[in-house]
Amino acid sequence: MNQQVNSQFTKHLRMKKRERWQIRLTQLAILIAFFALWEIASRMHWIDPLLFSSPSSVYSVFVSMMQSGALLTHTGVTLFETIMGFLIGTIGGVLIAAMLWWSPFLSRVLDPYLVILNAMPKVALGPILIVSFGPNMSSVIAMGVLISIIVTTLVIYSAFKETDANLVKVVDTFGASKTQRFRYVIFPASYPAILSALKVNVGLAWVGVIVGEYLVSNQGLGYMIIYGFQVFNFNMVMLSLVVVAILATLMYQGVALLEKQMTKQRKQ
Amino acid sequence: MALLNLRHVKKHFFTQEHVVEAIREINFQVEKGEFVSIIGPSGCGKTTVLSMIAGLTSPSSGQIELSGSRVTEPSAEIGYMLQQDYLFPWLTIGKNMTIGLDVTKMKTVENKEYALDLLEQMGLLDRVDDMPHELSGGMRQRVALVRTLATKPSLLLLDEPFSALDFQTKLKLEDLIHDTLKAQKKTTVLVTHDIGEAIAMSDRVVLLGHRPSFVQEIFTIPNELRELKPLQARNHPTYQTWFQRIWKELESLESTS
Image (cartoon, rainbow over all chains, first blue to last red; front, side):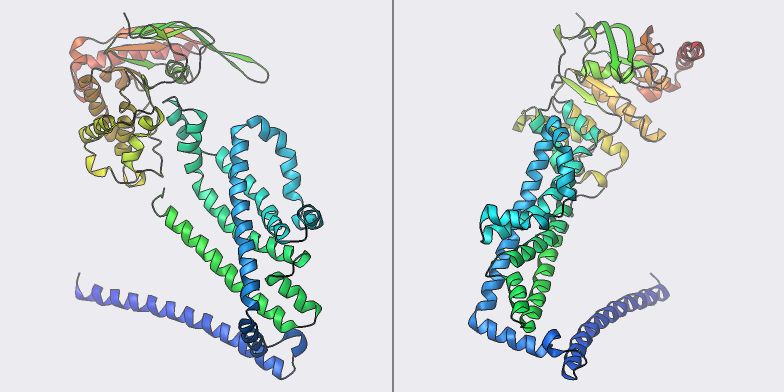
């Protein structure tokens, strides 16, 4: 490489690096500006501090709830419910999809019911869940499951069905059984669909669990929001929202990282 | 006795409204170690014949026998190579080529080594840990051949395996596959729409007539062409005469339809 090209290359790299820095700095500035503006607006009474709270008062609630241990309990409960809802919803959805693939008869019979269940706003079934599971944590988890399982089933089932028929033919020519067909072709071929369902389900599980806690619970971040709202403690509401935002993002990023790891090898 | 025997094979397909007669009557034998090509106008049911021999679909009537016993379902005895490689993108080359051993539960150390030997013959031993997308089309089709041969089938069915490749790769692969199969004394049935390929590779060529198909004629390729590699055969003087002859026959079929 000659000198001129070399210097152009370093310049190019420097430019790219600067661009990355500029983006990061702007992002940080927006975050700081948001909280600063919130604080100032609250102190100057541009917004009602009783309703919209302020970062400093949210922080003091955070400190006191950390000291009492209440925040950790609420967070722990919600996290547990969300992970359970997510896992059961995803695994259950994949299992039902496998059953539908296995029996075309069953899938044709169940088709209209799945359409109805999918169209139905699952949150509306809340009261039914509470009377079936009782006013406890299992109702909340059930809400997290319900909201994700149907759409998972439909997405994964269509991935199973749309597997390239020629890939299936490859194992068929060796005399593969239905189980082998599923194990060697259908399931691995649907990996990308399953992984993207995971990403969607993380978000859905959070929705289900927070709504579930609104309806029935005496612990959890959703409960904190409803309770804070009822006793007019908006500092608590805001704190819960911040925690939910952070945890939901972390969980989503975790799944995205998992997806990246698992698809690293396979490109086409 | 012939290794493969098709007797009075007929096939009908059912649609919502009609019964379609795809194959009127097919009779032919393939001897052990023989290389037979099936050619014919497009849509004449060549691939259907191959699917029936493979046991993937069953004939509406008539019999297909392999070494005297009736073919009713796919088995490791019959290897089938598709138009494209269809390697699984989520498996390495090494795992792709032994998928047949997995399915037929023949994955012994000995058989795995045999597959590796085949891969070495194909000149791809160093690619065993690569993913399929890292290989060219010709390489991938060679891996597909290894996958087909790994279960040691006594009969090999090739369904236009060169049709998706560029011309140069196709010619090289024809030679490689021809040599490999001759060396292993494999019995092969090749379906192709390429007259030249059929002449260059085969011992006999079965010409099928238009749908509902039947055996129009069976050509026996002379020894001087059979003994040559496909690429050399294509340059042999008699090759052109045979090409013309089969071409005319095929043309007359097309024009009568």
